[in-house]
Length: 412
Image 1 (tube, one colour):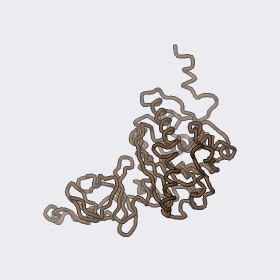
Image 2 (cartoon, one colour):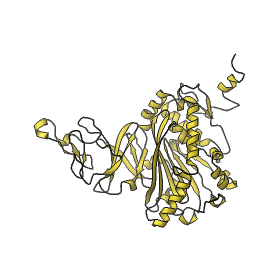
Image 3 (cartoon, one colour):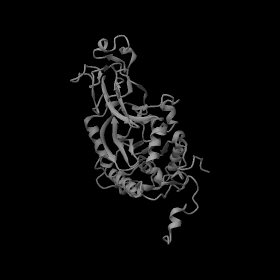
Image 4 (cartoon, helix red, strand yellow):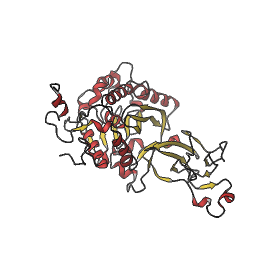
């Protein structure tokens, strides 16, 4: 006989409706994951780095989007451009370093050019082919440098100096249009003057990328964080509003964090971002995988790169003002890392939560219902942000989050 509560465990609990729960298979199914890369990640705008990480002409950074290798460069004209990091000759990866400069030549290449180590083909910062080794001897008049070049990708610098890239030439929207107004709450604070990355670390987490989105998007899990409960559980905190925007984005409104209530912490009002009220905290979660948190003195940005159904690469960045004095910079670093650094007060708790979630709904586990049904007038512990994200996910995937074997249907 089945266990007494077997049917209750499998069925929709209580009186929850479509949209208030999802099927756990969307976090673990390999076919669904591959489909996400094709239907979502290859089609949308993706944040890849910050412009301060490539400050000088000929600087570069490499990354991947949906397994496609990407290189972002700053040209001698100061413009930031993105290309597939793939040589058009034999499909070799051109640059294997995570970052650096092309100002000086490598052992196999010339200065100020991207050089494929395989056969020595060279490309300038606009992606034009500048040199083919023994060009005339091998190709005569059948192929020349003007016939080949790097695959250039649409690239924009926006929202506080972040570099956005899309593999989709036909996306039909600029980055600003893609944001659909979700960044308005932070725009004046992060665009008032140039920002600079002061902290960077990355980690491969054994969790589905959507679980990291979830823990950033909903604040009901602040019960996980002792620091947040001590410094924030007051009337203003519980009144914060979740607001959904087109394209799946969500913002969480601000309130004043009482840092001095936590032993060993201090107010951050002296280093508040331009125009931001002292010690205030905003959050923006942008579909499909980038999150911004501005806590008074430091802007945190998490950029996700899905690797497998149960693995995600997360790049964690902390940013302050480029104009900071050394003393101000050290204070921002301390404020950021005490909560969000690799050994910060909150980060390890989030990581523990998402990895244990993934362990409990691995690809071999029986399907179950994951609940997104809290409704509290779109305030901080309402799971409206989750429902908004997964409704957008359903549109892009043409799958119902509550039953991914059925085609998408808008929740009632």
